[in-house]
Image (tube, rainbow over all chains, first blue to last red):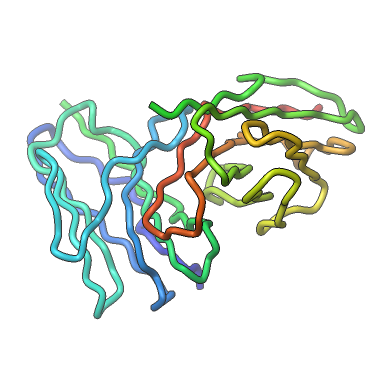
Length: 111
Length: 115
């Protein structure tokens, strides 16, 4: 079983839709959580960190459930430009500075 | 803004050639990483360095070596390129110090084709 698991999708949604991605992690020592975005043929870039209390950045909301060991990303009012692969990333003290990346969930927003 | 640059965006090499991929970061980061990314396999860590001249094997180090002689530069070497090393290679850096809340910054990637 992979340490970080994501539904690969693809998720195909119309513009304006709300879409949610989940990610589960198996290492209970995990300390920090992030969502990265990767556009086609480009490098991954940090989208947002995920805090215990949940956090919002415009149309994007990230939540963490430590008890069930999953994080989520909600995108409201989807735009065409949101089409990308979203990577779930988990860090822990036991990993000595390395990050564990999920394989990503692909989102396509259609007109 | 952190800038991570990689020496080539696209590279075509022949089987058996020695290949050097270079990565430079300009933010005095302690940690540097080399990954490869293949469809359906996600990002896989090849090597990791947490200081000059220090290196640690990642998940798939076989067939690769690395060099970190200066803090800002981390090189990935394919000693004898093989067709199964055709891939997208991504370099990343992070601040260091073992803080779990730190994030990684990626270079634009090198698409390597081995014929």
